Image (cartoon, rainbow, N blue to C red; front, side, top):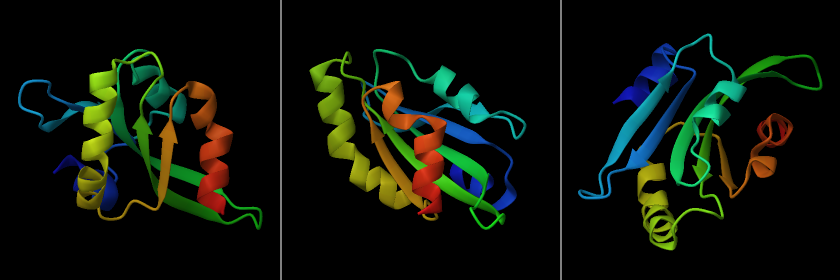
Length: 125
């Protein structure tokens, strides 16, 4: 599973997942290369469709320590279809449990709810 490569080997900076409409299987849609940034992940999220994403966040604590945490984001924009939001909401907990090692979880309906500052603040606390 690509998530294990992100977690253990740090082969990827982020992974965007989508649920196939016909099979309801969660599949990898995009893999972010190690040199990509949080803004690159945000740019991959469609404005009118739900997605799941994980991001390997490197940050510096208030005590000036370098840390890394894996962030899970459930992206469900207000403009997405109601059926899609229901499918993603009902699948989230089961899928999230498969991602052993996620330390921060975030639900966002628009980009202001998942700014880099919010994600970093969640990771530090």
